Length: 243
Image (cartoon, rainbow, N blue to C red; front, side, top):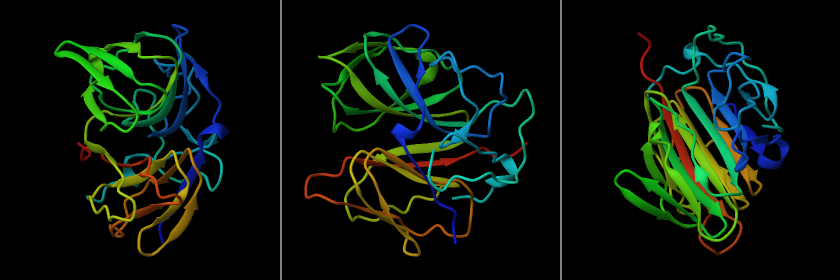
């Protein structure tokens, strides 16, 4: 039986950005970063955590291919002082137009959850992103400028250093069977999640995460509680093999 961790966004303390343009709620980081590592988005990081509780899961915890309630500490490899996170999932509240922080060597997925949307100013041109649009994948080192279309937005971010990852919109009731070491769901609407062995009700604005590689790679499904299109996304991550 897989461990399932869930954290509702409002249970995580927001960290203000250094430029004053918004705030970030860090939902999940893997591996846990050193306590003195600073988050360039927020300028004042909390240790890698799930629901504000210590969460340690080093490379030894995720080798098979492929915040809040229920969180508990894992007896796994603790990263050394020079080891950076490889996976970071966060919810951002963008309150003013301005540049993103630069994350060299990081691949980033960005989804507008609510608000009127944003325009990201990339070297290749402007990208308009509205609620309901597909996630945008880009190089985190680009640090694009961000212009709010009409007021604040809430946005989902998945960032990885190395390995493979994805963010995909959920189709309510349709199976998702991509093979990743770590898999999960972020949903902005309430519903029911299942992997064929376990079933769990999920509240709106919740991250559900299966952080460890296990033999269970069965398809996952999410069924929204209402008839409108699901406002939910599948998240997957597999780190690079250890050197």
